[in-house]
Each structure stands twice: as structure tokens, then as C-alpha cells.
Length: 114
Image 1 (tube, rainbow, N blue to C red):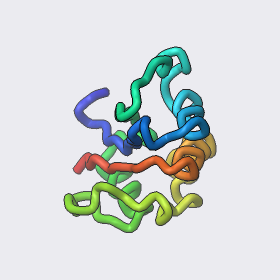
Image 2 (image 1 turned 60 degrees about the vertical axis):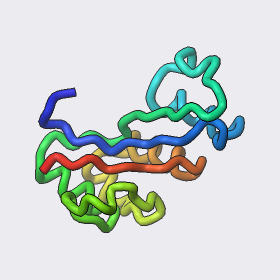
Image 3 (image 1 turned 30 degrees about the vertical axis):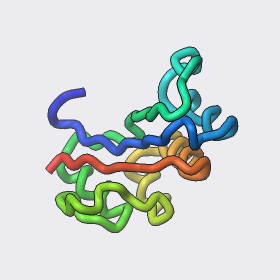
Image 4 (image 1 turned 120 degrees about the vertical axis):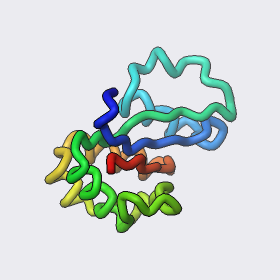
């Protein structure tokens, strides 16, 4: 990751995921073998969307109804995501991964590239 990249990450404690949600993680970011032996209570963090310019970063924030520099709202409400706009920005595959994680109950955080 370079300093110019913006991150939109997910996290969820393994103790809360249950079997169905744990199965979402390998399809989402890392190969499955890296999740073998995750202990209960562990937190997994990975990028979902990466915006390489400030303009895309601000667009990403707007997709969730927050300002890029609205620091108190960077734990975003995944249900507010504008899926059509996200597809325009990041494509079907990234949005499908996001929806899968959202539906499994993961939490999402926005890190600005101001």
C-alpha cells in the first residue's frame, strides 16, 4: 500500500462470526489457509475498497453518507451504502464482496485519503 491509497476496511471479532460468517472471510480477502486456527475473539482487518485519489476517496465517503474528513463517523453504517454508486466506482466484484461481508454482519471503517 502506498501513502496515496485510501482504505475502506472491514473487521469482525471471530467470536461473533459463527461458522457462516467465518466462511465469508476467505472469499473476501486472504486465501482460506490463513484463517485456519483463528482463535475466538481475534479481529481480522482487511481492505474492501481502495481509492487511490482524493476525489475517489471523497466519493467513497459520500456513498455512505459521511464526509471524508468527518472523523467521528468513520465507523460507517454498511446499510447506508449506495450500491449503484459503489459499482460505478469499484466494479461488481468488489461490491459483491462488500455485500457478502455486510450481510454476514461485519463492521466497516473508512480511512480517508484527503
